[in-house]
Image (cartoon, rainbow, N blue to C red):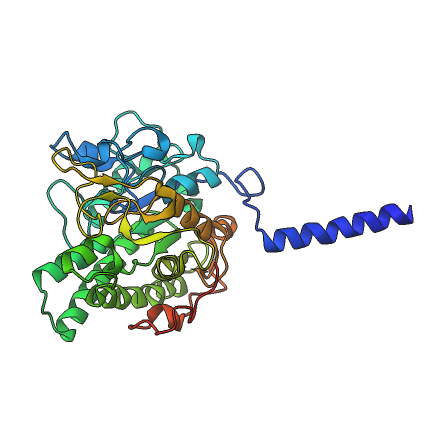
Length: 391
């Protein structure tokens, strides 16, 4: 009996150590309630809406090699699944994918993607939608779910890239005051749109910070920076990012039970920077992080999927961080989704997505976003490991 007790104790310790060193993904059926997922934003979260909104019938994302890792192009800007698909899988949404809202006849009972490629916060092309228009679209569909279900469901937002790319192209010599004014106008509108979603019953928000936009292959290629990032765009992204946490804190602190505003912030900026700066040395197994797997040009950043462009395709996309000039490979998308769902506070703050789901709906928050000085530092340190963890 004593030997058996000793064996059980040892196994228990080993199990604890295993869980601590190798976090286990917990699915919705294992203590997480069935909730819906609603995504808003641009091409990074677009589940195929652009295909149904565009007059063109030959969009690049509907042709090979998009969808290469899943054996078919599906209108998404990757070689396979995107972050919301993995989150959908983690919370046991059927088939592990989130349907595009504009596709006729889709099942939206467990949520829907309202994100559209080329979307922005301040304005969008005719064949896209601003974040505000996406929010209004959600309102028109609201009767498909009861208020209680909406309140406990997830609302994920990633948008703003188009605003800053367009601003930089239109005003390449904008001074600091003009940049600050533009960032303020963008984030003020974002605040209004989030407030509108809250007024429609949304209570649980996941807001993803902007990536280091100056490090996108298409930006490096267009600005001819070689292996360097285009720092003016990175600075704009950081100015935007440093306003998000305080904004969401204010929403949460001003709300009261039973309508508490709950949120978490994903530090996408530093998650990207870690991988493109130290992709191999920190065991991310990413061997090419400054050029795209698919495209043409100095960084293979243009023309992927276009019929009139003889774009190159890498031999093994899983060794690349970027699949095309702006979007990540499925491997990276999966890494990022795991970070969102179960990472430590250096990546997602003040709680993980899983913790956000199980947090009692409508209660006020007990923890808030706190600034990570490394993530809002305007210029990167000369030491690539400064402020980095292996998460």
